[in-house]
Length: 277
Ligand SMILES: [Zn+2]
Image 1: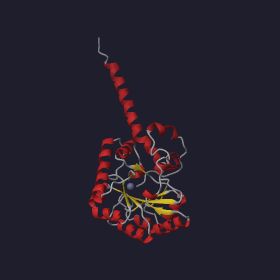
Image 2: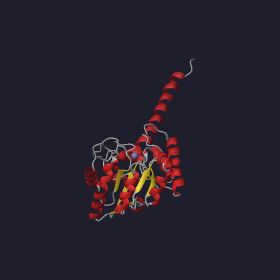
Image 3: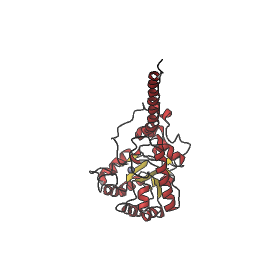
Image 4: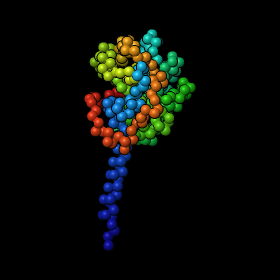
């Protein structure tokens, strides 16, 4: 009698397929929070919704010696403090600049070790690299970071688990400036931010062109005075996430695969495809 290899093999394949599908779902379902309308409604803390009289100003992709100092000087002139989501590899490459950001009163946060795209599940790598970035910022500034925003705003299951394990709170944004494009101007950045901005919102800009079109940071820099004036005219204070009042009891931080599944039917309006957040 022939052994039941023929029977066992298909079921083994089936198990592998089901397991693989489960891993893929756990990896990618939390990334549905990339859809701004979806996360603003279902996960307001993750979206960066804080107290109504305040707007959080955040920058991604630095530190960059070519551009970041210009932002620090502009923010000094405007009397504004912000949160900088930095890359660990850049922080250790430019420790003086990283320290300068903190010493000038800004908040440092984790944007990852490198600016990578999470195509495949790699929870071990996610934890290792995020921990490395946390450690680097702690070593350079003496302070442990609080916030985490993944590259491209894609919060996979692995990145989420890594952030939780390290005590980081994931925060994305409610309004961006599309400042990473080659044709961005100060006026276009201001208009794009203000189109989506409300009191309690979180603004996303970039203080580096590391993952963007060359020199596009000039548009974000040029937009700053008008943006800040516009917020103040609307009666909103502008500051870092630590002053934003994102309540811990205001809904879950991020979805798990099970919680996210039915909400995927929520209409999510129009955002373009991946961007260099
Ligand atoms: Zn980025």
